[in-house]
Every structure is written in C-alpha cells, then in structure tokens.
Amino acid sequence: MTTLKNRHSFDRDFGYLTQRDISVMMIDIDYFKTFNDKFGHLYGDAVLKKISEALLHVYGIGHCYRYGGDEFLVIEDFESKGRLRRNDQKVREYLKQVKILDLKFDIHISVGYVYGQA
Image 1 (cartoon, rainbow, N blue to C red):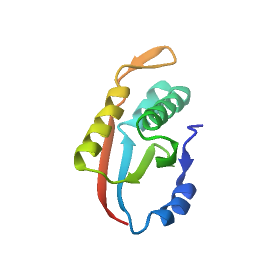
Image 2 (cartoon, rainbow, N blue to C red):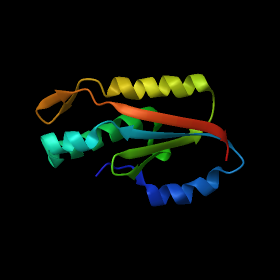
Image 3 (cartoon, one colour):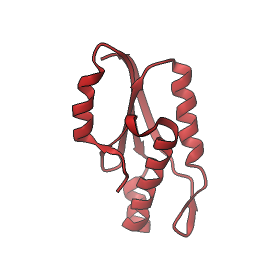
Image 4 (cartoon, one colour):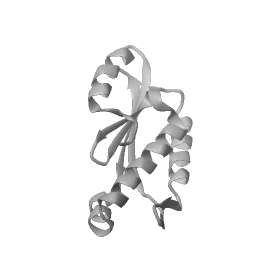
C-alpha cells in the first residue's frame, strides 16, 4: 500500500550497514488510532500513503521502511545533526495542509533518531 520496504527488508538491509556511521530515525503518526476511528480506514490508509510520499520525497526509496502499523523507519549514512534536523523539518512541512480525499489536514508525527556506528 505505501510502496515502502517493510520490516523484513529492514532486517535484511541492516546487515549491509555495519562498520559505517549511520542515522536511524523512527517516526510514529500522532493519534493515528483516534484518526482512524473518527474518519475511517479509507482516510487512515490515505494518511499512511501521504507519510510514505513525504519520506520518499526527502530520503528516497533506498532508506525508508514501513516498520509497523503507523511506524516508519529511515536509515541512512550519517552526515550531521543539522542535516537530520533539516530533513525532519522538510518531512513536517510536506505534511502540513495535506489534502486527503476531500478534506485537508495537518498530519502530526513524533520522531526520534540516533546516530553512530552500526
């Protein structure tokens, strides 16, 4: 549905990242269950697709995974903390005033990231 790689792909891909400086970002959609309950799964699925579009737009297909229901993972070579913050901000901007089917929403996400050598 999202066109992103899945959790199994991440498990496989992570092995290629050892001995490198990487950043790992975990993203969770805020209040997704409440949104799904209020608007229905058709809208919820559209939100998942919009998150995927935002991640693909900023990071590209090789770095993005749908890890679980409303959880996403981005893993890439680490360059700087500044780049992490800039990319996070780009994703958040992409998710402002998103049109989902016939309604406009701001999609809010929680993001945590770490960086270091795998």
